[in-house]
Image (cartoon, rainbow, N blue to C red; front, side, top):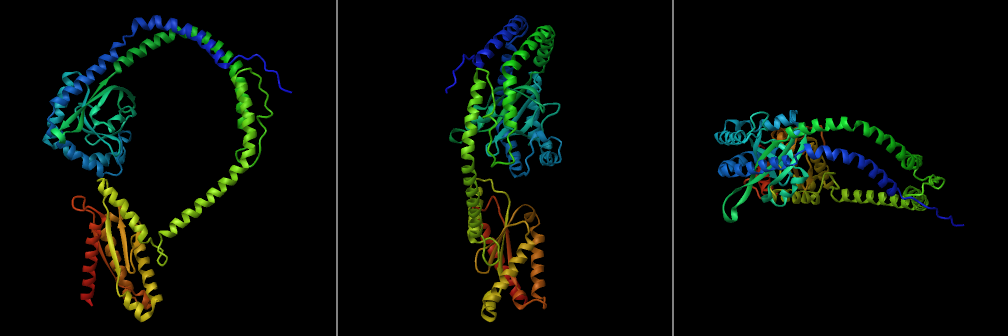
Length: 492
């Protein structure tokens, strides 16, 4: 039998009546006080000052000086890893990063630019007038020169780009229209930034921004004082309103919602295969959206119970398929004999590096080319099994030496190692260790003949100015390897 629908009062109606009652008391009292005291034109005055001074600074500064500072700072920023922001001010990483720019404090152009910015700020009674630019790749805000006399941000200092400013990534010419921030690092500020252009005609581009921060602490202090007075004035009224509101919200909202919350918490999340009847047994009669919500939850509960097992089955099948796909991918990129990565994996890595080189974001790296000597002789005299043992032995030595770098077998007796980070920094030591290990196994009479291998290694590093692709580095490493092979033959 269908239940007869009772008269219902929607929850939004209850809420509206409550808001109207509370807001009427608060707004009438607050507006009569704040309309006399607060001067909203203060905000417009601060934003106008910041914009005007940023535009003036952009015109006053020498564009060649600005370009010079950016050309000094940008390469150091791009090459630094990590790139700590001002939120990490004073940390070891931050101090090490900022130390790279200390040479600028003795640079005449930096000193001249800072003096100009300081004078602009002093003349206009503004604390912070500074230069910055935005790196579109990292979406970061980098300081070039800060004219503040106290607590100036050092050159190279990094800030995260606020969401309100991210439009500049698509159109650098819009600069930084006035906006207000209140952060722990810099306080309560209104900020404006004007683009600085360099070049003429088709070569004209935005190289930096003349930026101004105007402190709004005076407004904040005044508002805090007014709010304190208003708080005392409204304390009595608020107490009465709060009691009424608490009673009303508890009766119309908290009590039924607590039932729903407890029902949700009673679900057993650990046993996902268990069916539930919590909402089905729940009785809520509020005659509003909460009751409708409870009914919807009952229906949802029944639907979930019906579909849960099907979803679990499909999830298990998906996980199994993902594992199989991952396993097949790993096998396709692995050399079956030595266990190192194969030519397919190497080509894929080369493609990634070439793309980074084309985008001018490639980090330093080196390539070691290694070739096993006398493999054909070993195969002819001892058989291919012995040749395989020689290749495995060489692969073991390579992997043991270059522990933190990927190793590839790209041909029958040719191996390539791509060195980055710690291995790149220790390349000369690792190359010497490799040659020593080869000499040791070559002369170790306790090893099988197939394991007393000889191999030549050649090494070259990536030059950002000269190399256009990985192939350029590879060719030099390959040439160095053959020179090493020739030297080894001459010693015999």
